[in-house]
Length: 424
Image 1 (tube, rainbow, N blue to C red):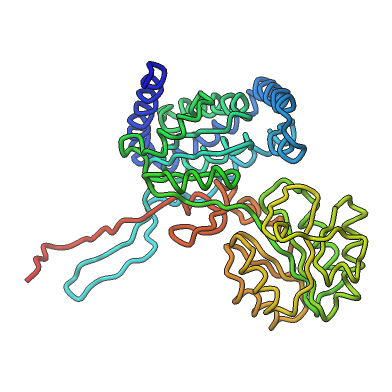
Image 2 (image 1 turned 120 degrees about the horizontal axis):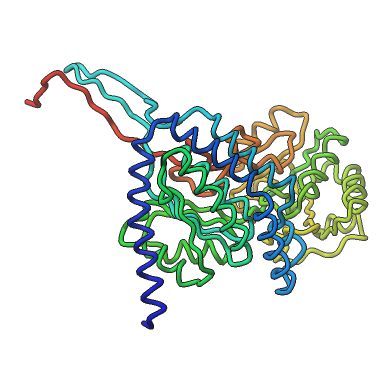
């Protein structure tokens, strides 16, 4: 290993050691002190608007030079409104009920032992993410709220933006008397830094959370030597049932796809019940095409709307993150659920129907982290769930699932209170 490699490894190990100390400080801090830190972080983000936006402009210019696509540029872009939303999101997290120390269950045994299951921090979290500089603030805020230290490794395309946001966060922590080691950011784009994090930094890392494309998540899941909270791509579906209200169907499908095509809650496939496809598919297609969406249909959809492109097998499992939507005609709830089970990623899926029994059948049959009834998939967002922010949408089934907010970043321990009991 060359000197640069040794140096980076040493720096990363030192970050892990510092994070352990930061985690202890956060765990022992009062809820009020952590709230004060979050409020100071939001204030510092607003005060540092000029340097943050300047850093983002440099990232955008470099991204354009590197040929980054429109939707990816949209993920990367910060403006005054998005920066204000970022600061406001931190304030919402500050206002959340503190999750630590809460007894989620408590009971007394016949021998008099009082047993409580109490929420506690996970410890040190490593967050590896791409493109979105706002994740820097979201992850930092949620980790501070939940008492976890965090090591942030943003993508090279958003490095300047992330480091500028991180500088504001550190000022907020220090203003509240908390150490900078509670929220650290990797200051290099060297991909070897990710490898060191995946190795666990001498067992300093308790949980790794990847947020990005399929290749990033696959690498993390394959190489990580610490537990991983998975965030897979959003292969999301909107199913228009035979009993759908046509107006709702058009509005929901249009919003689910076109509100923001670059977010993980964007719909990628439209499923239309065969019983009403002749009547509703032309309405849906017309609205989507007028909004600038390219449609790719299966054989049955092409018969009804021959202006569509023919869908290829790969389309059903592609997260476009662009104004492109696959369209399939299916047979009722069972057909929709079968299509989703085959091609979906377990992220977010929606049904549009006025039939309550069909809605409940869909909710029971579709095994995704988020199932919506008569609402857009774009509500797949921690802020919309009242979490203030999110670290991501977890598609795993263990520990946390769906939007990962402060409460989902806790584990628990049992506190057993006795009066001198010994076991016979």
